[in-house]
Every structure is written in structure tokens, then in C-alpha cells.
Length: 76
Image 1: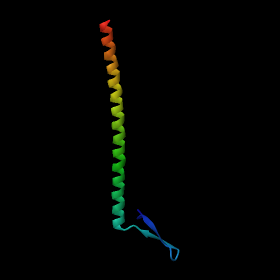
Image 2 (image 1 turned 135 degrees about the horizontal axis):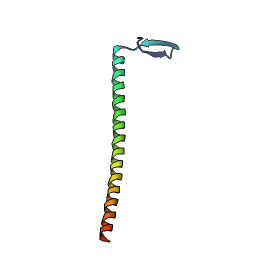
Image 3 (image 1 turned 45 degrees about the vertical axis):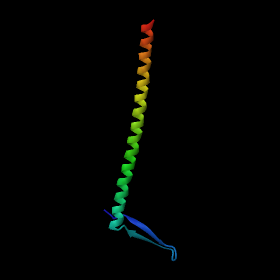
Image 4 (image 1 turned 120 degrees about the horizontal axis):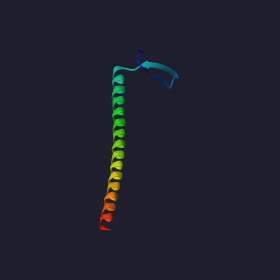
């Protein structure tokens, strides 16, 4: 597998060079990838939690409406 590269441009000469990433750059790339994955997973978990809370609230409202309906029927 080829090692990833970066482009280095010397603005004073206009020379563009492809340079292989160093071990440190490769490690930072992996750290950034892991952090990005963790952020995405946290956002997805938050979205799912909000959806679950909304669904739970809807069930609670429906249940309250059913109970109110039964109370009204009993009082008649």
C-alpha cells in the first residue's frame, strides 16, 4: 500500500512537491479519524435519544387522553 502524500508548494519559486506523510502525520491522521467517528456517533446517539423522548411523550399524551376518556365515561 502506498503511503499517503501531501503537497508542498514553495511560493517563492512556484515549485510543487509531493511529500510522503511522516509517522507523526500518519498518527495525527488516525487520531483525527477516531475523533471524527466519535463525534458522529455522539451526534447520532443524541438524535436517537431525542426521537425516543419525542415518541415517549407522544405515548404519554395518548395514554392520558385514554384515561381522561375512561374517566368521563365512568362519570356519565
